[in-house]
Length: 391
Image 1 (cartoon, rainbow, N blue to C red):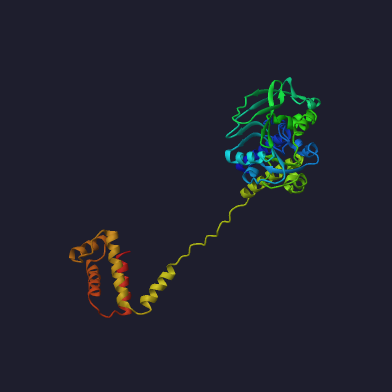
Image 2 (image 1 turned 90 degrees about the horizontal axis):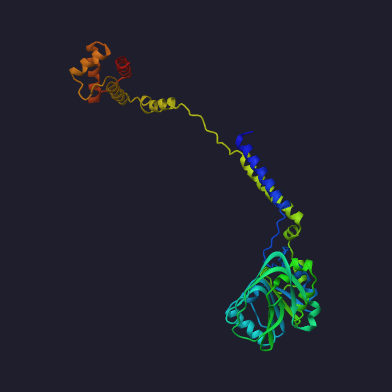
């Protein structure tokens, strides 16, 4: 096994071990207060979402994404209550004008959030909650009829006061001495603001009864309730039964911790398989054909061109041209002037008789300057003479 493949196997094993550790042994609690209507973290709302129909019996509950509802808001002849729950809720001027007109007609708006911003009339009141056990703070109502529903809140809190431009404020509840449950009369309806959504969270409801949240929601009088949360899918007018029926196959795996871990391991294993499959499968190497010796084909072509056509004149002309080129290359003699000096020099270099050299050079001059007919024997004799000179 190559070093590269061994290294890949080690890295993959370490990554797989890390994934298992993260999935099976990561016990860190997420205390982020997102107030997701479907998640199970301490400060999410899955328990409340599952119990809302029990907390509001005999009422029709519809589920909307907050942004979706505000974008597609349509007024209705039936009196209704809009129930917002989230960490930070901002309502801009255009949306507030629609909601304000709806409240004036007798509808109610119920906002439960740690930070509420309504542009034009209401500004921030932020409650920061630190998840450290501290002295319990009392949750109280100003209405004596709700005294038995009072509770306590055991987390350290930091308040920033609300600023109100318009509307008469009515305090309905406190956390210790701080107003956290407010109501404003606007026309025929009411605007409710509750600044401690943590009492609707999974952590609070697991450690306390539903008494306090149910008492807060008891102010909802209208039969139709539109429950708005940022984390609902963008699908209009869905009941809780529809939510259960529309769950996908993937949700079936993701809702259970062990099935979710198995799905993650399956995905990771598939990625590892693809990685090693890529490494193991070698690219197809094309077959390179062997180089062929085409010298014979070249000779055959030349022979067909000249010899078979008995063009002795052209053949002898090319022999002469090739002979002179080799003389220049081998002996460095210029062949532009085939005079007596050239003949003497060539005789000296080749150690051949000067008369023989002179006769051969004379034949070259004759062949190159005249159109005489050349026989096959003359061609053969001249070729042997040239070959004798340039060995």
